[in-house]
Amino acid sequence: MFSRGAAWPAPPRPPRSAMNVYDHPTFHMACQPFDPVADRLKALVVERLGLSLRQLEDYARGRARDAFLECSRKPAQDLTPGEQRFLLANFFLCHFDTMIRPYPGYRHLLNKRGPRVPERRLEEVARTFTLQEFRDLQVWFNLTWTGFRIRKQEGILRELIKKGRGFTEEEKASLLRVQEEGIRKIVPLYHSLRSRGQVEITTSPFYHPILPLLMDWSFAARAMPQVTLPGSFSHPEDAEAQVRKAVDLYRDTFGEAPRGLWPSEGSVCPEMIPLVRRAGIRWMASDEGILFRSLPGGAPRSALYQPYRVGFGKHEVSMVFR
Picture 1 (tube, rainbow, N blue to C red):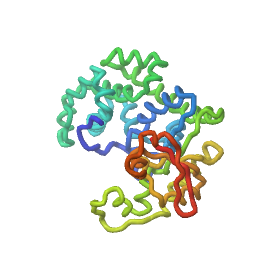
Picture 2 (cartoon, rainbow, N blue to C red):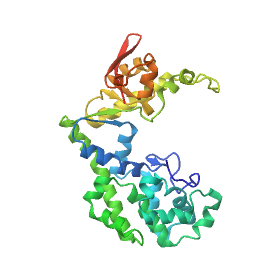
Picture 3 (cartoon, rainbow, N blue to C red):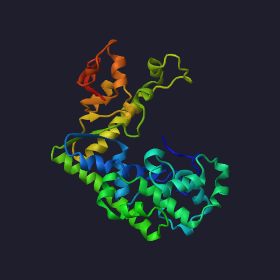
Picture 4 (cartoon, one colour):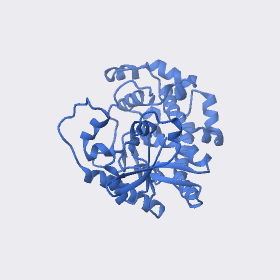
């Protein structure tokens, strides 16, 4: 899915004990999908938010420390050798067919770096890049992560795409301002749509864990009978904390508890049901593969397009599948 040439080398970042530090391109991932989905589909829309709510607030209030964003902001002429290597290793971290291939300027930079470059060669490759090319890489990585809708709204983004290369620091700064302004609008937009009854916003386990494996990773053998598991691990109390933490954050943000839960990666097991009901969750969503493996053989395709009630012990929740 992604074009990557090496394991991520360690970028300049605060000590690991620091709060609000994001090692992955969280800011850029937020720039692409959230705005067009929430702003365009002003009908019944269900979003999946857990820790991402807190992350969005961190970015909106300027509290986040993000190595990708910091390396984007830095003038190309001031990049250290380590930061140059970081750019080469990570600023092609996007879907090639839709985010690199359509743009000759970005594609040229990837071709120059090479499709797959081991970390030990990044220093050598960096010496072949000019300062202008590093700046172009900073711009293209940020530009390609902007959503299609915001590109239609912001003329500067269309101009940069048309220009293709030879970007200035001023143009880069304008691009980053557009991104930052967009991030600040996301949570207020959710508030607005939700208050008007146009969307229902779900939550998800706080740190995106696979809840069935937290509860007992022997549950993995249900789907993969031949799997070899290293010893035993069972922490249902941790799974419950992940759900309660997500519910608490949702309540702090929107003023009331969520009704729906979108489990991380759609991962579910019957033993989760009492846990999520204790947290006030009324319904969950998962994947059609799980549905059809749970129904009797030969179930029609139409079975996907209806809600279900599932239970464990004395507890029940509604389920929908996609």
